[in-house]
Image (cartoon, rainbow, N blue to C red):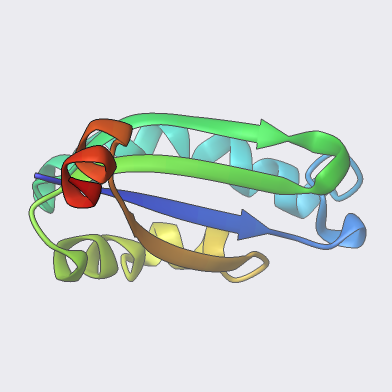
Length: 102
């Protein structure tokens, strides 16, 4: 499976730390993720947040970009993505990059 990054940013006004509505949506999302990920055949490797930069990076293994795109269009994901600007990027490991260079 390929590795994909979802890089998301939001404004300080929409930060869950400062905005009660966004905090509620953010706290509700984790309980729904597992079923949605399973439905689309994707596996979360991890998710990291850089709070001062209002940045979140999700790392997924997925069979295709289409499966990740469909996952991101689920109603529960759209609620979260509506106040974040997100990009989906195909990534490769350092080992894969080195093989490509050789």
